[in-house]
Length: 231
Image (cartoon, rainbow, N blue to C red):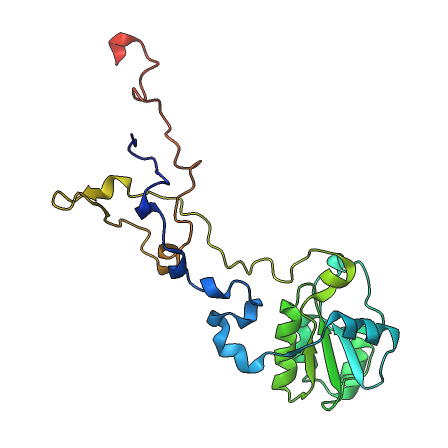
């Protein structure tokens, strides 16, 4: 028996077919290679691997720049050898500076357009975005280390904590009273009463937050604890 206001996870209409989830087939990909980032595909950087970073750390090259674009110093516990710090949110403006202004601001000379730029961040997202800014300024050899310093230093930081692509469970009136049993086909039909939002509509796990939806009163009503004459 299903009580009103509760959700039965065994019913077919409380679940969405998995293939209707947006970007379901992209979940194994790097975040900026997913289909809803298709507008930046032409900007994606070439990749370097861990062995390339180890090689540059052991034997730095005069025409290769290791740029660390991590944003928060309180999350930067270790320095990548031979790297220079250029925070991601300053890259766009730093590339507008002259060579003298750049050196005065950051303490190292501005990388020439023809030399190799290797970018690192925590998880590869900030360094990918920084690479787009370099490409917009006509740098031709821009590389991103997608594994980032998380892989180098065995950390688990994220560059942009607010960039969350998963939706929270819908906390709201779940339309359990809108289940209509068709008298002809004896099928249960769900008439949707919200949320009227395409993102929530296509969620893979469409159940609401059961803690928030828990009944606030016992079965015999809110006044069951009162004396009999006052009910």
